[in-house]
Image (cartoon, rainbow, N blue to C red; front, side, top):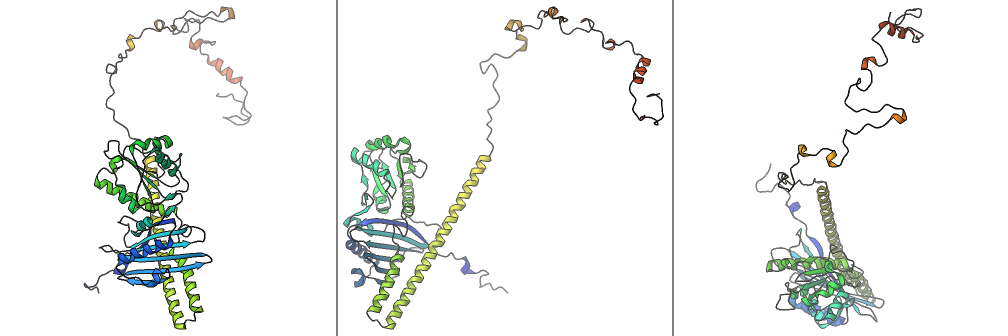
Length: 481
């Protein structure tokens, strides 16, 4: 019996499980590791309104929780390579429940610049993220105090403004640089603009949100011809438009191969500019995950956590820690590994669903393409056909046509051809009777009047078959008698 105070379905099955998605990645070379670590910790401590332990400032491993925020840092050493990694988990305030995870890793090698890596992940129940991706705020302070480079390009907190023909030539070389990993957003200035360095789309917030994952460039109208002369009109940008040059761009690139061109009407109002800015931020975030490989270019937190666990266990054993302390450390390590496994499974599930979604859209696009190719061509009703007078031609009249002779063609009444010299009867014309041509009538062609006896004698002279068709073998009667 059903009760009205209880639902007839399982509420636990109707809830959407939260998914963890990776939003962006950053990899760069750093010159001041201690400064970058201190700036990161100071900014996170101020944002979470808490006080970190002393182990955090000395660069050692620590774990700290405050108001639903969690800090976890590990430190590992393998041979001469030292790695410091930090994970910061923070819930987002609002109606939508989101949980943001920021991972920072710094790896030092002797005689080389340090590697700086950053990852941003989001956990929510949304099918599609309704938020603009942006880099953490502390990265701007790190770029201001330290030197960060990606290949031959330097990460700067302000957009690159082209101010001379030399800069324009350097821009062309930068776009075709094979070591470039981030997309380049080239914003041109309209020719009628009063400010020669102010494009239609504001470059400052775009630069701050895409710091390290894109390069924002402002190209005045007087230098756009440099790109046109180098790449041609189909790959250039001018007159207030903006173009995205992805990594791997060259002189023979396909304009439809992802190097999108956005015309001025896509950014001439605040609404269209905001929509285009969101699109560019998502484009830069996706390209960051495509350009930098996880575990090769970007250091994940788990890759530094595993050596840190081994190092901590060995340190406790060497210092003669009690069994209870070692057991507590082991339990903490198991909990960390369990959380990492859960996070990895969530990311894998998210990637699988995204891959299935992409395959579904591809199949739908292919189906639409096949239907379009099989669709018959539309017939256009052009109305009644105009007359000869409307088309400027004289009306066709067979009675007004001249005879063949007058049109330069030979007439049918030609003189008879001469066959006497070949012993043949001349052709005397057409349309006459047999008698007029000197031939007998149809019934008198070599035969007289119909004679029955003559026909029967003809049949008797024919060879008889071995067996009569109409009698016995000894029947000597003639055929038909």
